[in-house]
Image (cartoon, rainbow, N blue to C red; front, side, top):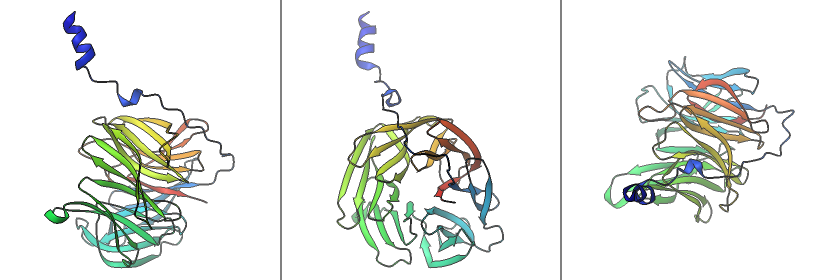
Length: 313
């Protein structure tokens, strides 16, 4: 009896974070005339960019099948300019190439930089004019991860912040004044926002023994997919204010890792569930879902490897 009590009281792990009671997010948007389309990528013999709506009507916007230089990386959607930025190279295994803007309305390509190294992670502002990216250095005096920003042409390069721990999933806010990102610190992680002008870093919230796989903005709130450390099969998508308050659960997910999570009009959620193997990245194929949060209805639409964001019709 004493052995059972000791084990129950002192040795057994505490309850999982997934059992914590978090208020349910409630949308106030009217979605009766919703016309948005989710922009996503498929990866196979060619990389292709598609659009799909909640009725599962899809349209191909771009393919590199006939291009001499293939896409090796694709940014998030610059929804205000209707572009995505890509890194292209004739060698698909290369870790550098040309930085190219693709206009999704006419498939026109514009070379922005002739040489651009593939970063650890990156983000494009919604107007398509600025980029931010992280780079890792193993040089002793500069060891760690650094977050940079610049114009898309490469001018006005700035070092924003540096850390010995990983900086990942940077994402611009709508008016390009702030960047949200996740910083890993041992078994903890921090959800941070940096002001581009003052370079002041604000910690929104920290999480213990959990993993945030993707992060995006929704107005002045942050949307993120989160799971318990070591759990590659289920988790939650949550939303939080910039003051670290009003943490709410938008939906649960199962079957893998939720990635590329974007909210539209506070009522429509797009995300991709990738099954975990060795790792999950932007070439891992998974099922794309569009969820109507007002009706709590998950709609499986297509399979893809990356969601780029929502675009108005």
